[in-house]
Image (cartoon, rainbow, N blue to C red):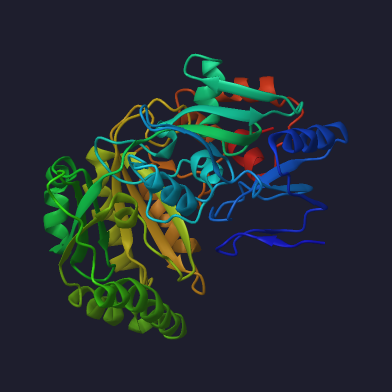
Length: 433
């Protein structure tokens, strides 16, 4: 028997069958056979979701055999990609075609299908998440049929399947609208949290990509501003030593050690955070977009993230800070804030509104429940929507009030999977039976 676990260790499973189709036809046959025998089937990616969205109860499908760029038109920027392609492999392949994704998240270990299906996003007030870059897809439905859809071909299925949490079928391939490869100038540096919140709209609107990290128990934030440069600007990457020092030693190895110390003696966490925030130094570099967007994350943690109306962001962070200060909780991980433009993807956390994202983390050896519950209450009070792949407690009735097209999504699910071949405990929680 194969034991499966997600990256954070929050979910495990021992599926009865593990299938590794090497083609779309083999994938369709696997789905057809599972449905005919009354078994539940789930495709799993790299396990980077913290929720149970990919937990395989009976039949687990790995899409490693569908993990390549299948076709590319450099003139239009349209690229067809196998659903099991890891983002880091996709980024390298696109670079070889002199193309790139218009926006990315901050890690690149997820599969494309997993990242799309859970609503993965980056940051940018004029840019949407990864699903907004999908212009077509092929989906294997519960009958084993391979269905193609786009904005003009079965548009309801397309709007539902771009972010479906795996509840409609198994993605086989996706067509992405890419852009010519570009360089980003990254400017990183510390700033008082109060100033960041006071100037939040200015910073979000004034940069192509803006985010900040606030260290609880301190008054400082690390700001990151990434902006496209003109063709006259050459790449000037972070030096090898500085990159090792900042991104490997301090952000991973030393951070792991300080978190272990904090787990053993929680009372030292505020002092550790104070030292870490004072150690922040500014740096600036120019590099290929995907190298600027994506960083290596080796320290294990649990995460919750909520999308809130952008105008509510300063108040949410201030209220969360007040709760942390009064709670006696010790939080070694920084809180991450990003932004996104409104979009039209039915289950997108940015559907129909300018959005800010607040992501909180807790080291995997420390309790997270009380902290995450308080954060959820603060975010929900202003209409927050939880990230589909990160920890939350909401159920279908709650989510139906958050998404104007939730009922339309359920109608599409009823059409393509009436027997709930792709259901598991998590989809029953968020979509009902």
